[in-house]
Image (tube, rainbow, N blue to C red; front, side):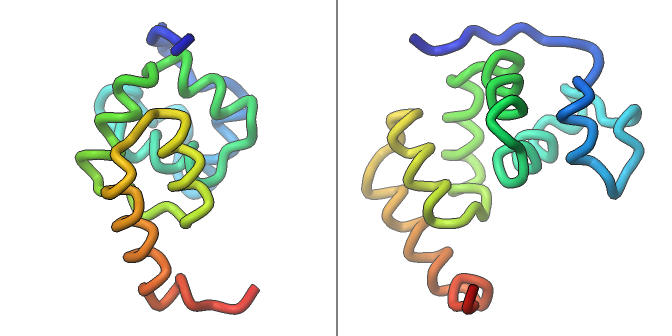
Length: 109
């Protein structure tokens, strides 16, 4: 069952902490939607991810991935979201390949 979007006016405390480099109170859910989605998907914990899915909905997340060609996320996250959101396998494979080919994809952990 996919969550239906339920927009809220304010970021919850656990999500606000992800926006340490800007004023979280100025992050507008509609105006900064892509930035917010990217940040939460990249750095958010499970509570932040759950909030994001409830707030924007899986259909909007799926559309974001397709429009942003994976959004520059790391391969493991791309694979995870590819499965959760039923993204086209060939597109996810391409995004993963591109992420691994980038200068950051070849870094040593």
